[in-house]
Image (tube, helix red, strand yellow):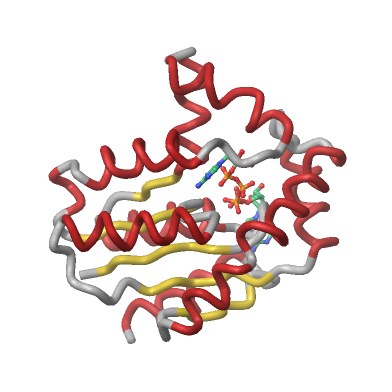
Length: 185
Ligand code: B4P
């Protein structure tokens, strides 16, 4: 059963790769960023609460994303595996996830991939994409948040021997091929 978590700075290609692999493995791609953007588009209560955080490059409060992940992981289509893209983004979220999976009796052993890409490359990629939160100022803030809040997860999962580092600074196809080897392992 494939259970994969994607870490990496904004623009590392988490969403791009998670979508491809989920399709190939026929398992759900669970992107907290996508779920939040959809909620903002539909102006649901979650979307209204998340909007200012996402627009300014800050992390949305834990409780909001934790609730949505819990709800999503409890859907029946996750029984055969899942790919989590953008969650956890903080050690507190990782602890929440571990406790949640235990409560759900999911066996240990999800793999955690850190997509490694230098800052100048991700800034260039995101400026080219040009989403609403892809302005230079907001991207710089997202990178700061990544360094302060998310990067500590590399040590967290490294200590648990769950971490695999993949060079995300290659073509999309090359990254996908490396990831397939990780899954097959
Ligand atoms: P996310 O939606 O997770 O966005 P991201 O980090 O910017 O994107 P990603 O790494 O997936 O990049 P992508 O594949 O799209 O988060 C957005 C916001 O949501 C956060 O700032 C935060 O406010 C909130 N949020 C989400 N999760 C949260 C959580 N757990 N807790 C709190 N808040 C949360 O790739 C980017 C671009 O690069 C694309 O244009 C793509 O085509 C290109 N690209 C990808 N791979 C490439 C390659 N190999 N070569 C060249 N270009 C490539």
